[in-house]
Length: 142
Image 1 (spheres, rainbow, N blue to C red):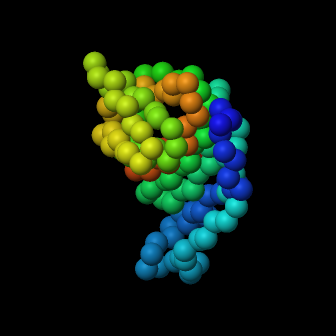
Image 2 (cartoon, rainbow, N blue to C red; image 1 turned 90 degrees about the horizontal axis):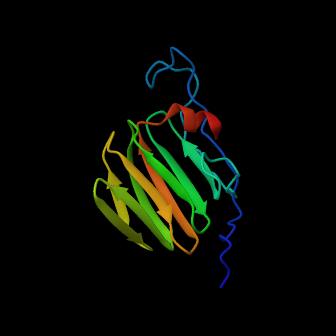
Image 3 (cartoon, rainbow, N blue to C red; image 1 turned 135 degrees about the horizontal axis):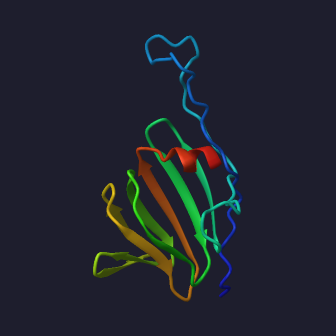
């Protein structure tokens, strides 16, 4: 078994956002669902060893991460609530004095502004994060 993350046939996409003054009732531009096919993890993340893609609306964002062994996000916090679902491997979270192990098929929900760190052990990890509200810095980099 390879330590290399599996590469799904995917690419980065974001939904078009309404312009200023648009609203659900008053917009002349139709609001419709967007279907994304063949999205692929990109090299862009704030941590070496992790690649991601994401899709964002105005109020929610979904990101997929492909993370190599021994990769770490140092302790941080953000306004967004975060739900992480591990699809493959095991991801560790330092939350206060606790180390929480999140394995394949398990999830962790992190409230707004709760300090936390995340890291992999000796294996690759694939995970999906849901974020609300959307972090503009992440959305703008997709």
